[in-house]
Amino acid sequence: MIDTKKLQGYLDDNRDLLEPVSYDFASRMYAGGLEKYDRRLRQVGFHKCKHVLDAGSGTGQWALALSEMCDQVTATDILEGRVYMLDGLVKTAGVKNVKVEYGSLKKLKYADASFDGIICYGVIFTTGDWQ
Image 1 (cartoon, rainbow, N blue to C red):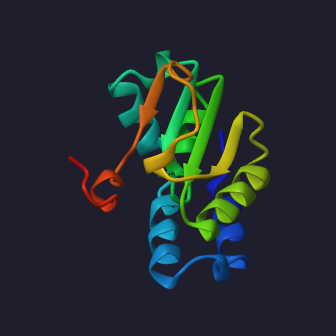
Image 2: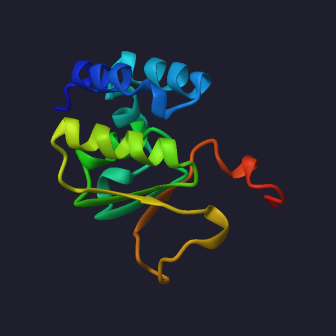
């Protein structure tokens, strides 16, 4: 079980990595623990996946929840501050199966069939011509 109090401490100590609105959002997401993310992911079958891509991972609440049910999680985001923050959160949590990368949804570098699950929560509408 990931200690979200430790994660909140890391968020607080490194809040300058994020814009204030992103810091506030991340604090709210981690405040209640990861159980709600775990439940939602299991409801849609992510617990059956081996390698999941969290596309547009932000500060990683979904990626960290996935880390407890999947063999490997790749989390990618286009904002450097969020990438650095998530990388630090992963290390603070002692999670070994989450790989954090910088990247755009418009130019994903992964070969077909690299993942057996992809989550892109609340991001697709920020990519411009999402249709």
